[in-house]
Amino acid sequence: MQASSKRRVAALALGAVGVVYGDIGTSPLYTLKEVFGPHGVPASHDNVLGALSLVFWSLILVVSVKYLLFIMRADNKGEGGIMALMALAQRSARDLPRLRLAIAVLGIFGAALFYGDGVITPAMSVLSAVEGLKVAAPHLEHYVVPITVGVILALCWVQKRGTERIGAVFGPVCAVWFVSIAALGVLGIARHPTVLYALLPTYGVAFFTHNHAEAFFALGAVVLAVTGTEALYADMGHFGKGPIRLAWFNFVLPALVLNYFGQGALILHDPGAIANPFYHLVPRALLYPMIALATAAAVIASQAVISGAFSMTREAMQLGYVPRMQVMHTSHEMSGQVFVPWINRALLVLIVLAVVGFRSSDNLGSAYGIAVTGTMVITTLLALIVARWQWGWSVPAVIVVGMGLLTVDLGFFSANIIKIESGGWFPLALGLVVFLLMTTWRRGRELVVREIQQGGLAIAPFIVNMTEHPPVRVAGTAVFLTGNANTVPHALLHNLKHNKVLHERNVLLTVETLETPLAEADEQIEWTALDGGFGRLRLRFGFAEDPDVPARLAQAGRSGITFDMMDTTFFVSRESVVAGTRRRGMALWREKLFVLMARNAMPATAFFQIPGNRLIELGAQVEI
Image 1: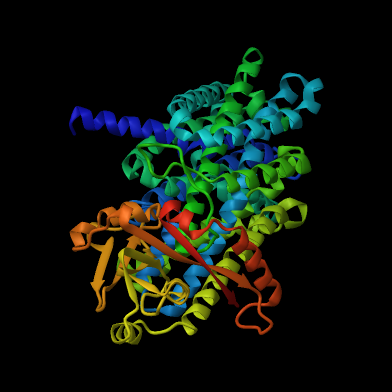
Image 2: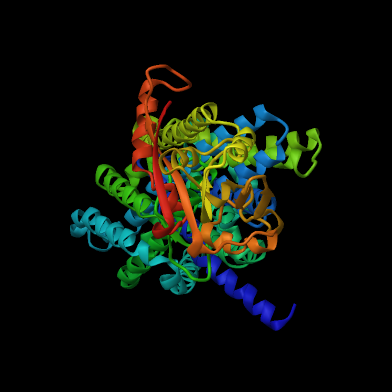
């Protein structure tokens, strides 16, 4: 490998340390505290070694084997994440409509749970970091929640500036964080070196043998060590598989293992340290600097999760699962770095409510885990579908691999389900609400399109009629946006009815979103010439692209059609959706919910970046 290539890989690996591993890197703040906390198992010698063994092998099996070696193979043209995986799985099962429906349901629910994780992760990470004040100065305990809320407010406020401006410090800060926690771990292990026996899986097995039901409950806390694994997959398109794997195996994993084992050694040396083993591991003189560093690392971890919610929202918009919203780009070099103001405000409110409502990381620990483990299960199921239908794996191979992965995933998920009453209901409720909104929007759009198509006129006889009874023709090009280029757009009919003219060239424009992140050059534009000065134009965008219609039209020359934007007028039918009295596919309350969402959605013209001075909108009422 050339020196320049090595430097680039090293730079990407450093960036991955900051962005990809921020969440999992802050897990030592609270994982062992939850395992041995008020609702955990007793901190006996065997239990400490057993819990450390479970944490270690969870990092190996879930992160190293499942995500880095298996899940990251399922890339959608280099892109990852639950929405990208859903699109890839649906493409793999193109000829199986029932399976495609099941994939869609799984993908939507997985995305909904990811939003729940986007609320819990910042609250848990920042609270755990700031709670170091309880160790450094117990009389400052009542300032923990206000300081946490202040940090969250600042975090959401700087989101609009994007990771382009503050991303340069992510990697170095997190690198200092991992070096620091590794050094602390070495100090702890030096006190009680026998803790290294926990590397043997037999201690994890003995943990279940001795504790029975309590060991199962402890899994709900052990899983906190692997939270953030979805970021490995979601950020694959930004950094690539190689740098992410390099950062994990050579830097992040050793640092995490050293710190966890250092905390375990401290608990064996001083059982009273279970109140907060991470901060009790820190020398007294370094407590305040460590609190500041931990808070910075928690902010970075939270920022990565929130940014992931922005990216996923844009993909969901393109795939038709959420209403159109304003999307702002925060980087001139990376298209994936976006800011969605509405999502940012919603997350801010929900995160603050979580902090104020739960008030401590101990209480939030009961809520944390359900969203993460639910997404992990769904990711495994979708990846197995891809392995069977895209990679051509045999059924026995899929069953064997699936049983191995799902045994771990469902074990973690089941251990968290039992915490619903004590706080687990919160992310689950958030996920169910988001799932309802996404499915309502998707189904509502299908009903709107169906109503429009049922009342539409076929384009072929319409063109014949215009040829036999020609109206007045005016110079220029008229572009009519339509979801179905085989029927006459309402805007065209209204223009002909009220203005009684047709342009010299009339283009029926359909914008399509592909199940791939980027549209290939040969599939971006498709032009079909029709009689009578009409033509059918299809513009295709990937789900990770912004649908910039004017920019794509400027490239249409290679397809044999040119557009002079100063001589082109866009005609759009703005549908006013109303809930009908007859049930046509949704309950009345869901129809009213869809109508509310439609009225607050960004207009299609703004979403497609059509210039206002070249636009004519004509209203149409659609009853669903």
